[in-house]
Length: 333
Figure 1 (cartoon, rainbow, N blue to C red):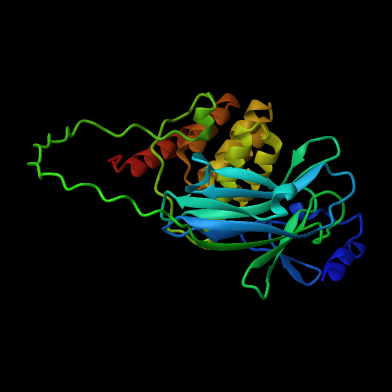
Figure 2: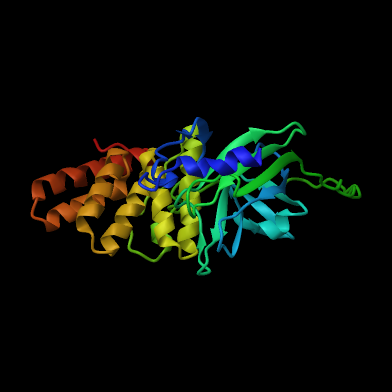
């Protein structure tokens, strides 16, 4: 099987765009007759899960300093010897003997994702770029094999082949506590109707950038494959941005925005504006505004006012105020 995959690179001419440029939505792309995924995503379920990754074979491009799999959990965490992390890179040296992680959900729509990661000849860690992609295969022993093309060089899905399997996490039974005498319930203080929950600030506000409008986050729609995909893209981009990988984060935000994630489009506008690309910021904020993101509406109004288009700026200010009122449950009438 290695042979048929390793020869695919001869079918890819150098003038074709890389695979990373072809991923447009939650759907895989078709390449040389096979379905290629930008990431492998699976629901985590309501209970902790044990995920085992094992190296099946490897034929990495020449010059790489390392390669492996990036594991990320959305609405959950990876337990690393008592520490909680939302993502971890598992290099091929650890995959040789197999490695097991415990994944714990923190919400009903928890998912985990796997995607190839590598270190190039200059020592720069990369992912989500070039000719990266995953071909998914069920193998006879009940595992799933991920045939991964590393982004460097032409597509070659024999670069890294990893098998994975899942099982319920084994938890020790808690020790029985001695029976305690029952106590009378303490009187409960009536809630103060004037107390309101603090606003939930998104990524751009935690970066220390001024927020146009502090707003509570609207509830996410019911989990569907496409919604889970774009949420996973957004959260992975956020993690990359926090690690200083801004360009790679922007690539993921663009994919999430193309799949309909409004906050990804808003964050792209913030980055573009900070880089001095006013036209780019306006374009992304218009996309986010069409997806009913009030901060994008307010930011777009500010840009238009600076350009002298006060009439359209005022319209977007009104739309922003109406959307904030709708999300907070209040009426503008």
